[in-house]
Image (cartoon, rainbow, N blue to C red; front, top):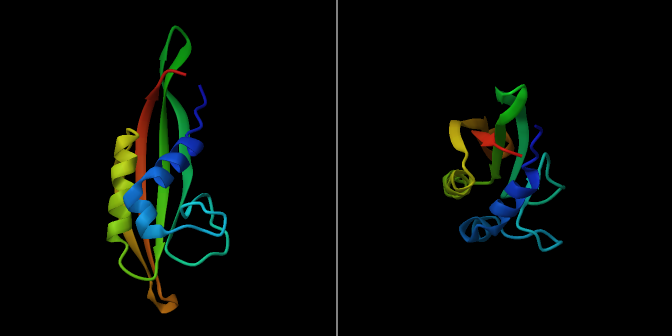
Length: 125
């Protein structure tokens, strides 16, 4: 059972009013949340991608659940915490649990980068 949650995550993150306020909108009017990589835009913004997606439980020779992991990256010119907190709330609402959070030092470029990793066991089709 292969599950694709990218559109669900994009819609949920872009629908978070706090996140929309913190990130702003791009030239197309979208809240600045992008699967895989962002277009060449100003910060802050959020990118995310699927790390793993595999079947993890079986019954009667059929898959009944999948384990899915995503990484969410927060990119900013300043404090990443308010954005990360809004992302975290949305991912929890989608049934994901945060497995890791880490700041990356890119200060020589003037970039604040926070990585958040999430996992979820998805049952059914």
